[in-house]
Image (tube, rainbow, N blue to C red):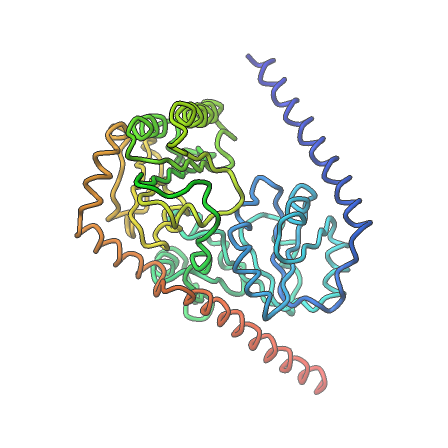
Length: 414
């Protein structure tokens, strides 16, 4: 067993090395053909130190960043070749691959970066945060009640852009001596202004159910994934009922820790394929695409794990079920929306169709949902969150100019 495990690890290492080699070759060709980024062009940088496995964290910001770039030029800074390659292919804003600290220093000297945005808590963020005379701003890659959302690492940033009142209450409970009034700015969910995209099917009388589970987690406290506990049973029930069309969107890291979890994921994908073969009009969807938005907008019901997907769906203002983790050590913050959520127990997964029917006629549940949407995101009217995002950036630009003038006058006085 140990030899088999070692062999698999060796295969993974070889694959990673080959991926990096291919990415470096592609990037060299891209550099040879493309002109360099113009100097003094960019005022906002989005820092991304991860590889392709965590691209979902920045992909959700593509459309808001493209909109922001119409006013202030934006560049994505990538620190790994496996992250830079797909970003260069698909990002709507320019990308700078800065492998070394020397590359980063040269880039900062050539540009006029005043705000650096961070979508995660990668340890290499601190290589950029060493540079002063600019604002370092945490924007995160989603809104949720997971423990990740109250990490003391928030204090490392000059500011944090948060979704709404729920985020402020959460941070206020957990972070000691953190000046929420000054350092946390509510913007809602700008991504929700872009919940759109081309559908892979033509809408008909079928109800669309989105099942978007998270990965299995790397420790019991974060064991929120439901693919192995709920997923196969609920998918089987929905596929057997011709009233439903399933969109299955698993987390890209599914199976990264537990092989059994990955195998359950593959069985669900195979079941979708078999159901479509048996009934071509079903048009069930296995979705592993980079774009998130149309799935949330088109689904009549969403079934999600404790993750940012709960709150992405809340931002759409449409019904959802949250899977209850089966691991007793999984930490659940039931002080917010999860205290009032509609839960799906693993024992009820096979009866999910009946539960969906009940919820679709529950006026009280719909009213509760509207209240929670307001608490987490504020006004979700189309375009309001984008306006608030731009206003927050505008405030930071003004503050940058004020401090730059202040320090310039101090320097001249000395």
